[in-house]
Structures are given as C-alpha cells and as structure tokens.
Length: 66
Image (tube, rainbow, N blue to C red; front, side):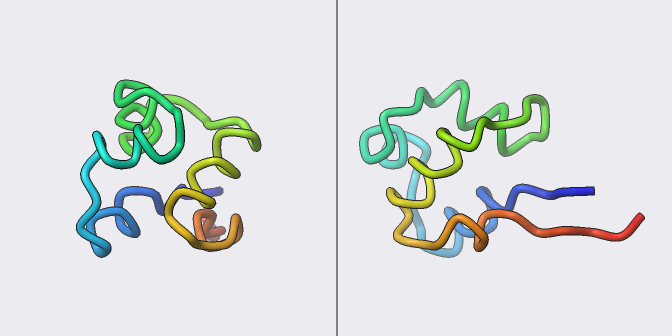
C-alpha cells in the first residue's frame, strides 16, 4: 500500500493549499482530494508537488505493509 505524505509535509512546512496551488499549478480541489486519499495522483502531479515543496519525489511516497 502507498500513502501520499503531502499533508504531513505541507503542514510541517506551514504551507497552505493556496500557496501550494500557486507554486505547483495544481488546483486546490485536486490537492485536497489527494491529501484525503480520494484520488490517486499522477506521477506528473507528484513531481510538480515535490518541486513546489522542495522535496524529492520519494519523500512524498511512503510504502506501508498491510
């Protein structure tokens, strides 16, 4: 199972969804749905978010044994 660490990283860095939207070009609604696990982001979206947060792509992804 894969968990997207977007909300954890974003809140730790005190970045709002609006700021992340501006930096990544991904809409707030999409970012919010990714954070809630309602949609699976594309690799392109993950890359844009990683660049905007100044983290590696792998920092956004956590593999969890089920």
